[in-house]
Length: 404
Image (cartoon, rainbow, N blue to C red; front, side):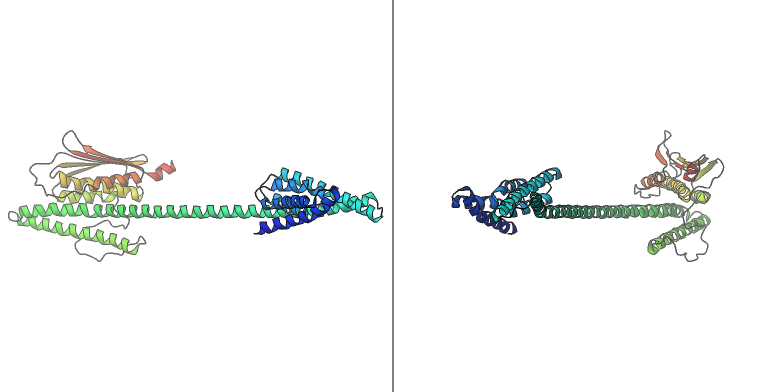
């Protein structure tokens, strides 16, 4: 509506000035009025075609019409995205054309009044009027265009920031989901490590207790005591783990004192290499023949490294109890430069030993490999040519690697 009103005003202006133009040139008045009305009405298309509008305004300026069209056209031209070279050229054309028209008009007006003024005064007045009519709309258009571009850039930047925030929120949700999955996997792995070994030994002792209950009461009593000790140890470790899950701050509440409980891992951070003897002793008391060989001087590794080595040996011994009862087992631990290696090798199952019928979930070896890989190590397992099974892992001592 604003553009239509401006176009109507410009058309009316040009049509009214066309009457004077017809009187000066001898054209029919209706034709001059129609030409002026059509030329002034072109201002309606100033936003789409600002260059032709300004050119038409400059072209009809000698007919003493189109002043509103020049002012509005220059403003629109300066505010648009047209290159500044073209804008400057058209602005100069408009200033020169208006200067010439005003100079001639003022000179003729002075002659008609009989007042002969100096030409330089007329030229000065015409120049000031030409600049006064063209410079303000041109500068205002430049300001409006710069402001519009600034607002658009800020809006695009805000849209970009909004998209980035949305993307960051999606990524944060993905990371949170990944963290939840990792936490569930870690909890499942810890529960497996804590429960599987102790319960497997309890089942083995319970089977032995059932076998010797009638023949050897003293041995049955010892096996029953071992089953109770294993159960109490499992409950103690489960209580510590559940305490971590409840508090959520990594601290554990001290378990209630229990009488006659064999020494479990004393530190709240998990087992270490010094407790391998106790772990192997539990399997030996269950009737398994286990031999431990240590190569190299004892080195204190990071807590995660020692805990992972312990869990590898624990999982391997548990699998021997499940799948190869009565087999002989060799545990080899090697302290090397910047790494620690462990090998658990068992022979074929002894056919004389009774199968305890322990179930297997199939996740122990997978969890063990996840532990080792998370610390930058490697873990392999597989059957041997003699019919046994081997599990080996190598973990780097990251402190030694960094120091080196």
